[in-house]
Image (cartoon, rainbow, N blue to C red; front, side, top):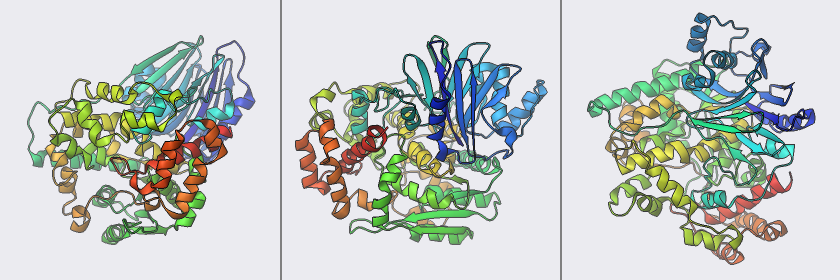
Length: 593
């Protein structure tokens, strides 16, 4: 895992070394082990390395194939690189390193842009093909690794974070009204290609972009997800066996493909506990697990140690438990916001940031349970959506998911940011895409291919990589996702969600972990806003910067501040925190750029 950046000049000039260096420096926390830059004609590339595979300098980046005129910068992990390496050697390619980076470079030389379809992993990379005069950008199927770009007229820049692009200067930092509507409707999800900033775009998952020397862009989507039943009807035991095998394979390759120790983020929920169980089932030894907890509120406990401790004891892991006081959370919160590529309102973002700080002192790679709820139907709103039979799919969806209906959005922001119901239009179009058998198949596919990318997946990547820690997400293995998408919805939604995973876990995990009520990463102080946290948010929203920005309607802000605990979204987020977090992110990441 690493940070990548680059500049392609479109005006005949050469890239300024200082600009590329600024972008690369902004990515230092993503890659604390080494730094590299490279310049050739109209292109400059920068790279920060987190050494996980082939720790030697032979896998340093940017990686150059001078004979073919190719150069690569890459962020991620390719899990099938040993097999691809063997195949490429059979085709006459010679390797100078033992890692996955050079495999991508040789794969491009052999298969061109079709190489992405052969890669199994989490990746974002850029290849400069000098003979073709082409810059090629690619992102993995589920968008696990980020990739942003900024067309400025005279040049095209790209980087792993918007902060790196802002550091280079020349970015139009006006707020995008379409993105703002998505942000306040989909709990901070802004689907590609938009970001909140007009001048920053992002590559969509499962997508490649090619740019020629005139700046002309060619976009290609190389993977899509079908959510249809297979030709042969399968019984529940057959489905359980197939999912068990696919998940075990996903866990195993995320353990094996590393030249460093791999741990597990153990929340105490079913998903992360099942990862520990499957690793133990495969004979993994000396497992290290990590849990974090916070202060309780009267309405909600601040930790799940009761369950994580039970799992750690059951499997004899080397367990690490961290308790963090509310005053520490509040003190460190701005620091966490500095490391958010985009504003993230999920209460567990700060939790992951503080947990990753501690975990990174012990290991460089962890497995995490993100994606299980979306792939296997674990959230409470799925059965509610399915139970409704009247109305168009978008209406069945929005009634249980949208943070604000369009009328409330118009009451939230100033008229300069008003427009049509952009989010309903987008979601309706995505739900109606072909190759989904039932409404709930449409919903789960939307979640897995769009919503999850810019919510839990982005949170985990940003917050762990802020400490040079790589998080691997087995539940988002694309082969497992493809298999699960074919499964009948009742095998997902039964047993109050994730029925098939609970069947796999039975006999592997303590029953108390399997049968417990569904939990969410507890950070109660950002959900039940009161005391110091309320005053913190009040100061942000009453600040001169916020008032002069002219983004929010003051009457709406005042209403939330007067009764913060009465204003929650349909999925139980704090509407006040949504506003305060966005304003804080703008102040710390845009105003100061």
